[in-house]
Image (cartoon, rainbow, N blue to C red):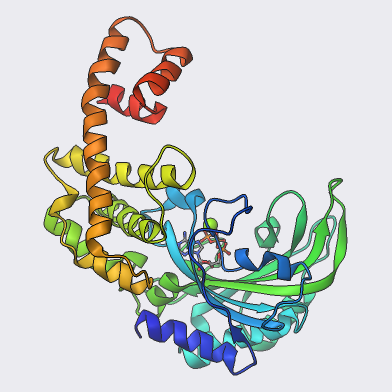
Length: 388
Ligand code: ATP
Ligand code: MG
């Protein structure tokens, strides 16, 4: 199945049960939203999950691109990307968790054909405020899927106060031999789907009160689902990442981990640019700048002569097309090219300035500040130059 077929199957599955398709939004949340990028499918729906009636009804489904800077340190492993697509379904005060789990199982098993014994789930086992999630436990028991009970790993919240509740995560076995162990004991159990019950509101004093309208919010990573459906070893072997892997390899052979980071960051950078962000020293622009600089630093460590202008346009074109971004490939390439030039200049000047400062003594916080304010050298770049 291609990405489009996988997404369409998801949307159709929930469509047959009355879910309306909410169009995905760009990575940029609306003005007034404190977060830099959309991090999940539920993010744009927050007001409706808290009780505002949604114009499209109480059953929704969607495909949303998400960006998580909190996952940057994990990028390069088998399963984490900075940018990924989330398949989401919602019951806004309508059906309950047991129904959501049953439809979830039906989709994975009956429609996608994932074998029953390659599935394992986790369920909230209770803490000193809330008892175990008996409903989910019973539902999975009836379906015959093995359950692991956990503590706060199966408790969802979005900060110290606000809506929260227990969740149940679905894992698929990705090992070569027969499935064994549990998600907690063997990381070949790969988390693909989380079903969250928003049931409570947590107050400043830590106490919980039930929400007037409990909802169900689910999210499944498309690239991870593709990985398990195709029996691949990592998300980097999927349709979205393969063109990048090929393109970057033609530029230069890199160690596996570095190759993955470079591909992830380039793909993310292209989509961020496609959503209208330009490199800068603050906010979203700074996230973009750091992604591009990390790519360049990694490449230049291998060969200082490498340039993004030698990259074929194909992966850029495919990525823009996949995310439905009507931006000319040349525009994206020139944003990358300008940033590369700026970074090269900065490094040239930076090397001089830093070594001069260094010869006068250790770099104090004040010197760091001064290098930043007068020469535009961020702390991590100075440290990188010192390390070289
Ligand atoms: P993990 O523990 O693996 O980081 P998570 O608990 O952060 O996952 P959720 O926030 O529950 O994940 O997101 C819902 C789904 O989105 C996950 O089950 C997974 O399929 C997908 N997902 C989450 N983070 C990533 C990522 N960085 N790259 C690809 N897919 C992801
Ligand atoms: Mg995570």
